[in-house]
Image (cartoon, rainbow, N blue to C red; front, side):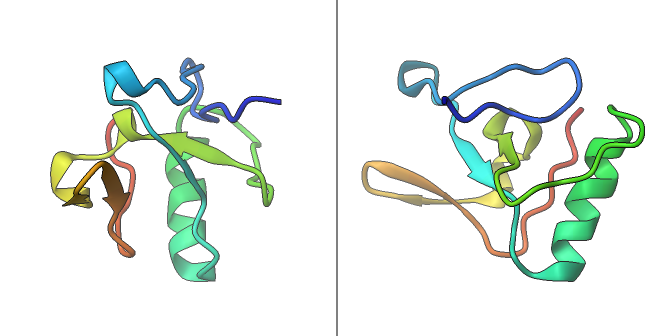
Length: 82
């Protein structure tokens, strides 16, 4: 099963040529709850699972560390673009 973005109205998957990446919800409870609340603004009564993902479209560029051949989400990144 492909990993898809859980944000309401977004069905992005990882698409390398468009530079779209998919990111699992953080395991740290406080940060995870912030992500979940932000997604709930697009999906009423939604709850994250251990398989929930958000695509890179929903993060500002400064949320990423650029590494050779890979964009890595910073540990404290929060999705804010909806």
